[in-house]
Image 1 (spheres, helix red, strand yellow):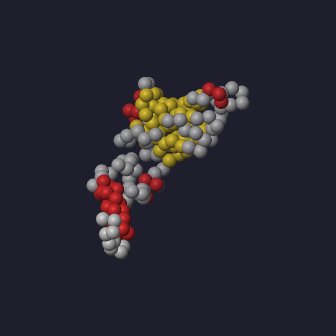
Image 2: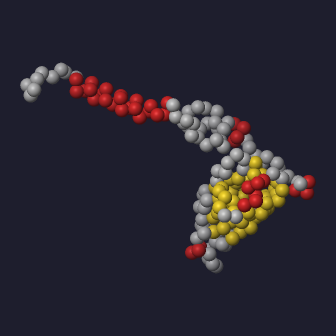
Image 3: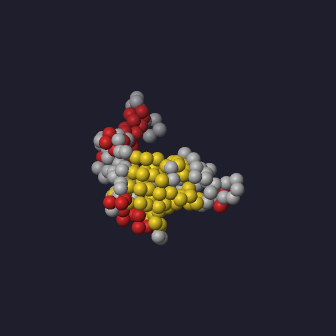
Length: 175
């Protein structure tokens, strides 16, 4: 066997064939895989990279800035169909917390940035430069608070431990 004659290029062809088989096996599960992209985002392409539907980008929204010691604005007034988003400029990680009952007034199919825990509808902690968004709400008045979980940042030089804000949707006097 040691003196067997080799066919030129056989080793290279075998390596190439093995590489192709490995590549095909790696992508085979993707061909019949279920679409696992978030259902909350309407896609207008079938590829793995999202290309958002232009109508989704045009959804009217208002932004609340979270700073170390204030919300800007503290009162957000939304028209029906508008969304609200919070952007943190605070040194302390901040969670946006509503009473659990607010979930009944949400007009969305699933919670994206928020989860229900005990008696609260709560966002994950957001750090400086991060944001959280909330789906549409039915007309009404909604109180929320910003809660800081980092005890070290409280006190005179740090961030306020709790900030209160309000969202008013539509004309709540009509509800």
